[in-house]
Length: 110
Length: 117
Image 1 (tube, chains in turn purple, blue):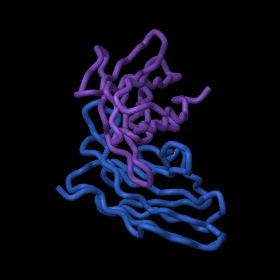
Image 2 (cartoon, one colour):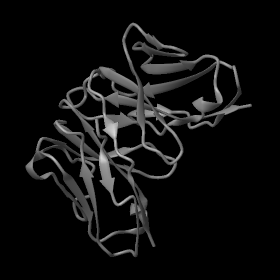
Image 3 (cartoon, helix red, strand yellow):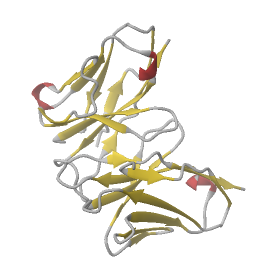
Image 4 (tube, one colour):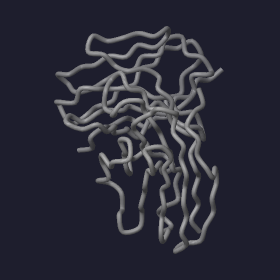
């Protein structure tokens, strides 16, 4: 089983739609979780960290489900500019490194 | 604040040739990371430095890849000799702290796109 798994998509959604992605992780003791955004042929950029209680930043909501070992990202009122690949990132316990998932590609259609 | 700088941006070489990439992290950042990103995949950590010491190089193919971070600032990543499967984007990132923490953000450079023919 991979350490971090994501559905590669693409998820094609109309403008204004709500879309959600999940990411599963294999090590139940993992503590730090993140969502990064990567535009085509660009570098990844931090979108948001994921807190145990869940957290929201504008139209974006991240949640952690420890029992089922997954994190989620919800995007409300999708914009064309949200089209990108969303990378799930996990810090394995006892390490200082980050493991990236393969990314989920989102296309928001006009 | 200046971002992470990388050069060159693009490189095309023949297999069995050598190539080197350079990275200058954000000033004051303790940790520097080199990632390999193959098309359609997420970044894979090759090596992680904290100051000028190696924290993790478990996925670095040491028979052909080498990296150093002189004086805890700039870093170079070298491939010698290159193989076709090394074609990828090589991303450098830096973070202020040791890495792994929820509050420690990684900042990425624009990457070097390597094509091995």
